[in-house]
Length: 309
Image 1 (tube, rainbow, N blue to C red):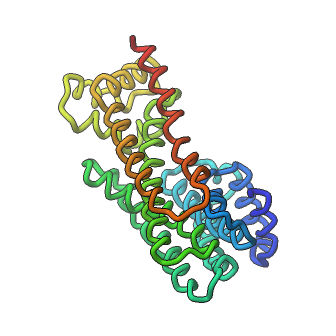
Image 2 (cartoon, rainbow, N blue to C red):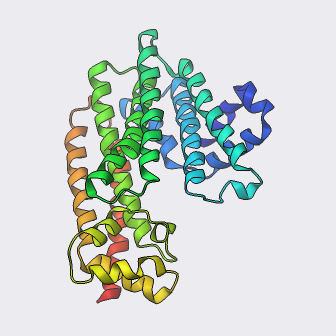
């Protein structure tokens, strides 16, 4: 799918003329982000892979590229600026990619009746993700705010990704609603999965030092437990390997990791129930995507718990 998407981009005059943008998008897709595979997984589940699916993948790839470029700008990440691009360059590129994503819509719509639906799906995705980003950079410090940002950013993005797959295979309005709801749950699972992984990374993820609150760190800072004060004192000093190990041990012992796993399993079970509402020929391709979010986290946590013991 990745090579097909890159080839598809050669149909765009803007990308052919704007070689820096073309190179940057190609670099992002060559990293093989799993997210852009979602329309293909949806199509496979319905047994309806067609030319519209590549267009849906390309649309999602453009939207995804726009979002991560903007996200890296907001986080002051050097991933793209190290390629010689200024903040102004990257902001312009991000805006252009949103426009190109909308330009792709007609090629993925099976029926003209779905045209308005496609515009609505992509508009809501980009609008809500942008609003979620604006809240996220303020470093929300309550669980209510955490879930609000998760719903706006991750849940809305993946709801749209699943919907693009539905548009490409021509599902009806009711089925589209089921797909969007399932995509929303997938987005929540992705967010929690990433939060658990980031919190347990060695060397430390930047979230430790920049004031961000992935779910385990938020739990350890806001829920009362014997090591709460100690955790707050050392969380920004985790460049010291011993302090990082201590902080991550606190995450395990105070219940922060267990709480994250509880949330993953709860949302996973809800997702399984939602899958049963879909009228698909083969649910396996979708089911595997959800299962892949459980296994690595479980393995990582098992290793860490063994180390603590």
